[in-house]
Image 1 (cartoon, rainbow, N blue to C red):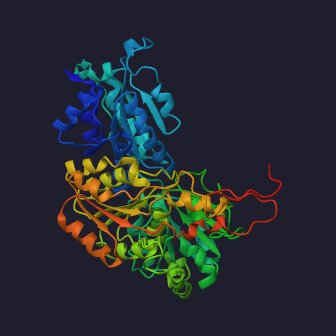
Image 2: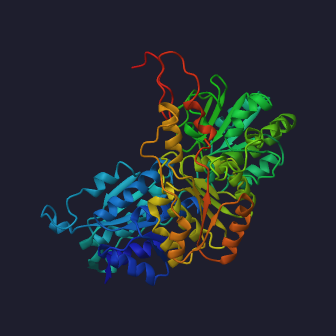
Length: 572
């Protein structure tokens, strides 16, 4: 005889799951005790949202599945925000939750007033409630296939408490299929058309995004292709690390695209590989991909190409498989050595904007750009960097220099502050020997301060660097851009000593007030071998260039809107 919970646990282990993140609930005990007995590492966080974020961070760092658990009712609703984040960014996460007994439906029982499956379907690829313990093995495998194949994303399996605890004869349980499909390769006709467009191009740029990060074959295929033909490569979102920072074709982040027309020439062909157009590629402004320039868009989702702007060629395929297919016909591609060399002028172009910026502003606090430079310069080569916050994420992203895939990531398109602590916990579990550094603002860190306790209890040596600028920086600067410099409504924060809070939870902790101490403090945190927090005093008066559109001149009648496009005059 075997319980439903143990059937789930066995299937997860057979599918290769080694870690799960969550908060205890009595509904889940048959599952949790079985997972523990089978050797799965259970990381119990202090909040279910952080657990879901940790599962997402684990998935981002590994390129595989992240597993979270949350009990019925408030446990599920707490995890909802993490589901939304994973759904928007297409991250493969499995959330296992529970609910009141099926036999007590509509009896006003504890935690029985919410249809969790219906709620989950708005932020998950797939959501289902199990009704019999015998079906749990094949349902778990089905959930994993939903999460990891095609367009990846979160899957939710709700196992009512009576199904979880029920004992059945193991012989009547279903036998799950543990075979996962191979990634889709591009059609021959698509490869031929790609070659035609590339042969006609004199200034192509390849842009790699999150879809490239989730394809395990991307980096080796890309390096093999670049050994035979050179072209500039831009990485966006969490696609960083597909080339080492010193590679002669590594152009950097998407900001380099905006700089190219001024420092080199405008590209005449954009090849998007698992990179979605939108916030990270200039949206409809044309600042990075001008209207009328041909675009080849490769994505596992055939709906994505053409969502923003026209495309010359849409290819539904895995990124690694597509690059491998191009490598097989590399002899047919022209050489772009001169163009690739010319684009090097855009590498690190952001430094020109801050060449004369003081290290300490009139506020007496440190300039965020210089802190980001010193911080990233002190990182180990295999470091995993997680960034969380509005302008904070922008400052650190200037210096994105991942040496390996899936090692530099942050908010994503949801823009949900507070995900960083969970991301870092999951990333540290995925790469136990690596230096994991979370860079967050004093606004973002406040969402899940209690997760310092999780890091300490589980001996996860994450270093949290708090950009403490006494405010919700992006909100403050956006508000002042529209309503005047003296405006400050619900955007200021006190000078909280986050290092003191961390120290009280058992972390190595320091406050950093001098620029020349940023690198040494990071090294001391690493050498401590413990979870750590560095509270860095950042100037609140420095505005990130991403906020420039809020002060740009607008045509008569246009309406300025924070964070988005201005509304043209006459548009309804």
